[in-house]
Image (tube, rainbow, N blue to C red):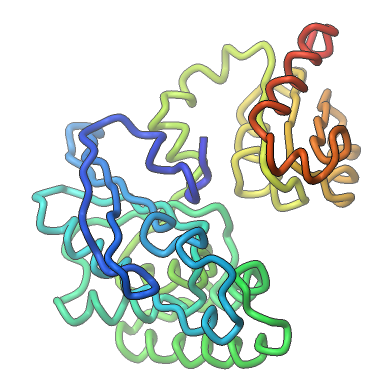
Length: 301
């Protein structure tokens, strides 16, 4: 599963291809995409994290992080438009950029804008200015947040003047450091990343038959229950279905949220069980062990 960030591409069968593009640090990188048949339409599936993901920019300084451009996404979309597809679905999440999508929009506008239907798959419904909410985790310092806020407002005004669409209040505009807002201003539509990934996997068809649900996230907090994978899954299984959530770390507000849901949910917090270092270095092994122990104990019925 994925909610539009890392792993989105893996949720879709189809022909896998690669295009070579200049990445966020100016080096050539290989960006994968999938050509996928959906409702008798040929769709290109891509993932922003592969082109401008945080893993491509390890430990940036605040000045470097605030100046990273989303232009690689513009070049990626231009390439996909040349492939004769009827649509593009782009997962937006896990990005290193906070430029409000200006880099991507500039590249696209230089070539006439979007020429095929584009759906952006997002995990949040935040408006454009709330892109700043994720700046700290991208390496931007607290001292630079006022600067970023001003730059986002300037970019919002530029997009409005250029496209006659104000991305400010649009749901999903804050995704991808504001990339969502820029693409919406250019004519894209927004969909739930979790719903799109579930459809790609065929999960939406089998969930009504579920007798138990095991899911997870690296860092479990209150936002996990909103537009992300966990929240989407909980909304699509029966209220009586027992649920186990595996996580690297559970934040107190997540535990408070779960306590108020009045449904059978077990939290498997790997950091609490095995320590933070072990949960970071052996996540797959520890998650497997924790789930097996739960099943053997009859914890999921």
